[in-house]
Amino acid sequence: MDIIRKQPAALPVRPNLLDYETERAGFSWTAARRSLDGLPGAHGLNIAHETVDRHAAGPRSTRIALRWRGRDDAAQDISYAQLRDLTARFANVLATLGVAAGDRVFLLCGRIPALYIALLGALKHRCVVTPLFSAFGPEPIATRMEIGAARVLVTTTSLYRRKVESIRARLPALEHVLLVDDEGGAALPPGTLALQALLDAASPAYVIGPTDPESPALLHFTSGTTGKPKGALHVHQAIVAHYATGRLALDFHPDDVFWCTADPGWITGTSYGVIAPLAHGITQVVDEADFDAERWYAILGRERVTVWYTAPTAVRMMMKSGADAARRHEFPKLRFIASVGEPLNPQAVVWGVEAFGLPIHDNWWQTETGGIMIANFPALDIRPGSMGKPLPGVEAAIVRRTPDGGAEPVDAPDVEGELALRAGWPSMFRTYLNEEARYRKCFSDDWYLTGDLARRDADGYYWFLGRADDMIKSAGHLIGPFEVESALMEHPAVHEAGVIGKPEPVIGEVVKAFVALKAGFEPGEALRRELLGFARKRLGAAVAPKEIDFVATLPKTRSGKIMRRLLKARELGLPEGDTSTLEST
Ligand code: PRX
Image 1 (cartoon, rainbow, N blue to C red):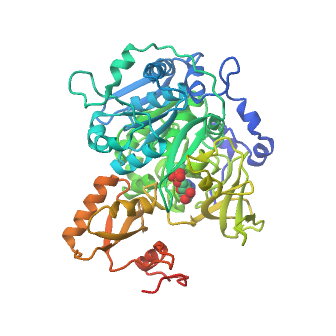
Image 2 (image 1 turned 60 degrees about the vertical axis):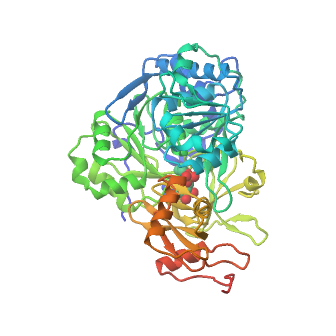
Image 3 (image 1 turned 90 degrees about the horizontal axis):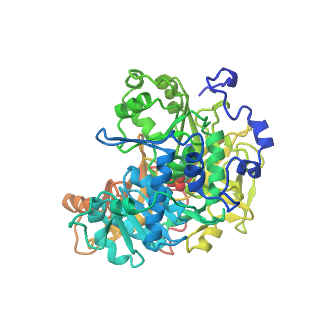
């Protein structure tokens, strides 16, 4: 597909990154850190100070920080000054409850104002915050809260009753459950507190304590192909990267209205749906509702969004209803569109021009990297299908694994290999919680190995080729097959299960399970439906398999590992590849 040429001088707003090579040559993380204030009295660096208090104390205090739009036309605008008071109240509630710095606070809510207030308020109190996706079922919630030893949970009454009550006995560390929607009264579920009454009684002033920039701030879970989910731990210092990528990759300018469509339960919705825009003191739109093309077009126009960060699945869903549907709306201020999380088809990049008059800029990163690492920058020509070039301050390489288990960079262009990043950027994860060995396995010398396969062309653009492992990407969500297999195996009829991502044109991949039954159970439509419902109830709609096939046995290696790749090859009618380790049956 043709290169989309950029003429930076002709763009409506002068991009922050005008010339890639110049910016790269002049960039340093030490200098980037100087865009932030630090805590008064040189008491370190705290995300909540940089995103809230410093703007509330200055000329931007009355500017809208969060422009929240509710599911049924409820709306709330929260200024930086108001956000300072609300987050201070939440931090004071934690203090009153005896919650200490370093304690883990989990959030399980839809995109409602309380989620944002609790997230930032907990950071003020120097707690470690984990937002969980509210469409998770009880099982993924329990696993993550167990690993994280959650001491506080902020949730709604309905989510508590549906998803937490049944697992509470598994969470001995959980002391305080704060319900955001309860107006008090007698009907509180046992063992919960009404947050609003506590907030009303709390002071709206809070002085953030000294915060070491290297102290933990956020714990985001990501799935593995084997074993339990991994808790990627990020520190307050990460905000240096959020700020820098907001400036360079998303091109934030002081008057911007930004909309990141991701949920904070996934890291995009925290790094870019909370931290980066607020660090810049701009206005960000939050929509509580799920995807709906017409609703989204209306928001982009009505809220006068200038910069929009979304996902390929959403773009492909919009493409289904045609560019005309978009063109019936006006987007008077929109000037930059970016997307992340899964491959963005070249057609989708160009469709942006048809629908919005703007191409869509793909960028790449992971839970572990904390922020954008490779991007199509506003002033850079786009090669549709490419993820773009590494961020200034980030060194990327294509590496080849060596026989001794190490990795060496490949200098030649157009060679397929594993994408690696040189360790040392501020938002890099600092460990997998309680799993230091698993963390160390991600590095070879000082290269962080991403688990993605890619190539770099002669001009330095990176092209995504696929995952090096069995991870599934469905509607932009990373799903670990092991978690799905484990849930299915809880069913009395299931002997074993193998789970794969089956390619699907709109959402990328659907979760598909192959199930071998225990003796005495017969495959059939009723059992298939029962298993689908069973998995959905435990895992939630975002993670559960959409398809189940019954098989007599699953292909396994001689050491007993299910060969998911072979299941996938057979499903797709592809060559089976190397089956030398296949157990003979
Ligand atoms: O495989 C890559 C894919 O998403 C993975 C990271 O998923 P997660 O940890 O959930 O991070 C979400 C934050 C973006 C990557 O290892 N991925 C991400 N961006 C792209 C992508 N695949 C292709 N193109 C992208 N732009």
